[in-house]
Amino acid sequence: MQRFNVDGLNFDFPDDWLVSKYDDRSFYRNQFITIKNGIKSLDLLAVDLNKTAWLIEVKDYRLHPRTKPSELGIEVAHKVFDTLAAIIPAKIHATDPDEKQLARAVSASRKLRVVLHLEQPAKHSKLRPRAINPVDVQQKIRQLLKPVDAHPLVVEMGSMNGLEWNVGSE
Image 1 (cartoon, rainbow, N blue to C red):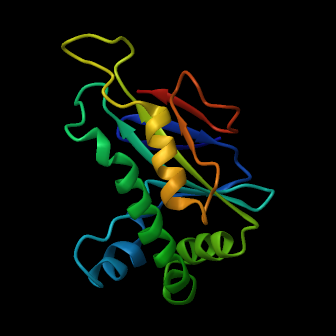
Image 2: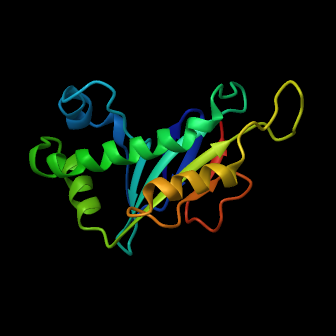
């Protein structure tokens, strides 16, 4: 298994997948984001053996709740757009062979899937409410990204919807 830690969550992917924390990549970090202010990327990119590219954003609000839950779908859509916009230049200009390989694999994918991994407080309470309705966020992402993925997923550790990777807390 390949393990990636994102915001205190451990993501374990099969060894035969190509996976990366994209916002840590050199071309993205040192060149692409200089194009304009406000460019952001998704947390993880993965390509499985069926040539499906998984575009994964991670949000963990168990300790620090989100103040504007209504904007989460829009934020995810912007990150998907910015990340996909970075893939073609990285495929051509990245100097890191791993980053170039990932960009090539995503570009050659047969299918794109968008996943928001959303952790919220387990119990509803006045102090730590579950302020974000996953169904509402999923619907917003679907509306905004239908040409990219008509069936995006919103998952959490307790409900992974059959995904082939595992997620656990530190």
